[in-house]
Image (cartoon, helix red, strand yellow):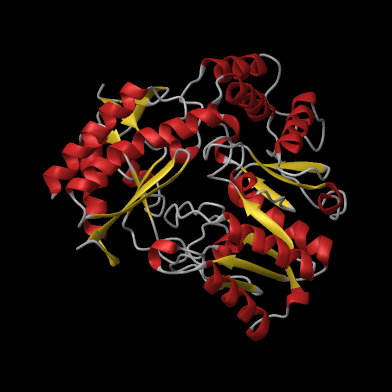
Length: 425
């Protein structure tokens, strides 16, 4: 079996809407390395889109899952619950920033977590409105597509979307959007579109994932917290991609010194097993009636076992600190490359191990170089390097390695990246 044959089978069997970045079919993986069905080795700078923060096939995750498989695989936590779900909820509640007592629920995907945040916020406040941000990504369900602030490819052909959703510019220094401008836009929504007393929640990613890895300034998150408190609005932090040590702290918004009312968690939570959660202030989380929240597979016992191992690994291997080390090492490579090609690499940014470069023409932030970005991702795949692109302009390369990646693997991968870059330019 080879990659080309599998790609042909895939195109015949799986709808084109569920596309794949490159025709590379994985046979096995370990930490930050993959081997495809043809035996070729690939360095993974994507980590399954920030899912395997603890690396592929971490022995402690593997052992925890195998032990759970020997006991049982499913009973439904809403029918016949189990201790691992309770223990994991306790750990999430303790890890969530802020001193207010917390409670959690479990679902299966990040989109479900966001949807449930909306449900909980509306149940608690009795209000309909939700404010989100341009460039934000929150999922592919109908509600979360409405919340997502990027049309192509997520919204194309899928409307209409739910009502009572409003978007505001995300603060972005590189593109000239100041904190003050963003806050003024928010005030204009209250003036022109929906009164503050009808807004249930404001939803924001502390670092925009699909939107381009722009980080919200601490001052902006603090201002949102004050506005929400003033108007009785809930503040929802979407930590799906930025959570679980990825940005140098367990959850990114703790760096701003604020406490969310509700927080989503997914991706890095369970070392590759499908699991997601909503964590929030206990009185808010208890607003929906019994049976109003849940799902058949939410809180899978296998996923819970994996997630408990992930918590242990993050603590034992000091992955919050390691995320900062990894990010710094990547940026050293990228700074050197930018010094050689300042007209093409317009901006380098990172929050821990959420690292990105923005590719432009003529060093101009307003001239996105989406063509080079697309070509670079494809060429990297051909040369044994998994790279992800993102950004509302399609011109951002993001680096999301496992936090357990070895330094020599970073260096090797960045060597491949530089060669691919230079061959294209």
